[in-house]
Length: 385
Image 1 (cartoon, helix red, strand yellow):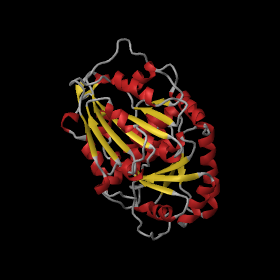
Image 2 (spheres, rainbow, N blue to C red):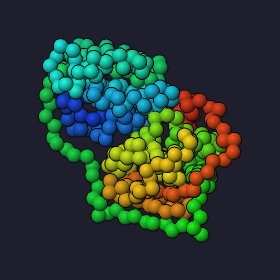
Image 3 (cartoon, one colour):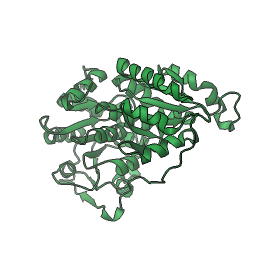
Image 4 (cartoon, helix red, strand yellow):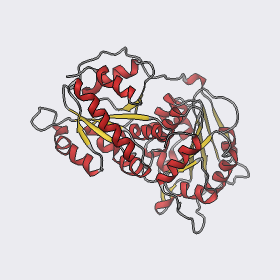
């Protein structure tokens, strides 16, 4: 058995300064230690996939992060691990607990996942080893992990067995919640009752985010990224693929890792609904340099135009309730102008812009690969690739 600091401090020396996860009793000591440790940051994620995507954002910004989860929640992380980290080559260390280990008494809900945890990691092309239970084994394990991260740009997992880490009481410090009394919502009226198209909105965002400034644009998967690419393929843009719903958590991690940059997340209504819980994560941990935009045409347009559930959702009210510093909604491009206007807000900004559907003819797919996009963005930021 080891103490929390015997792993966390060598991990810090190896470059891991960011930790995110959903708690498990097996590594509660790690969470307690990181929360109280100066120079380290822990993000309490709404789900395991958002923990992974946030640490992917840290990697995109040139840092290294650790995503921690119970193996029962590993399924929640499959989408970003396979279609975000793998394709963009965004490395991180995973700590996955081994609930339901065969031969070890546990609750019935862990039995199947306990049998398949290692197989699932291997199916996702994630090498793993058993988490070190002795202090002398920590350094070599971290060396193997960091070598893999550097050589491949992809995750490495440590699978933690029960009773590996001694108890470490925490201070009980809570996340930095913001008071809702300081929030306000601005409804921007439509112009001539004509909603803009997605192309109109993206063209305005390109105007508002010149490449010689501090802005970075992350476009959600589907037509949003493809249309942004078609309008202008710029070094300060990233086009997500797969990992639907993870744009806001990816942007949160990047904004935290790079406070010198303003990160503009271009989300969609269907994608935002898929991981709506991350609005709470972004609102709590995000700073003034995070802008979260939801472009809402009410459709899953790239998969055949099926309606989303957005027609009955007041996204701006949800953002306000979660604690965003500014919450905007409307049918006019002025929503974007106000969201990106100069001036400080207490925390991240949110804007919900309702659009009319429509896709340009012969919309191209990016000719640049996701890994190339990530390297190009890193070079634009001056971050390690």
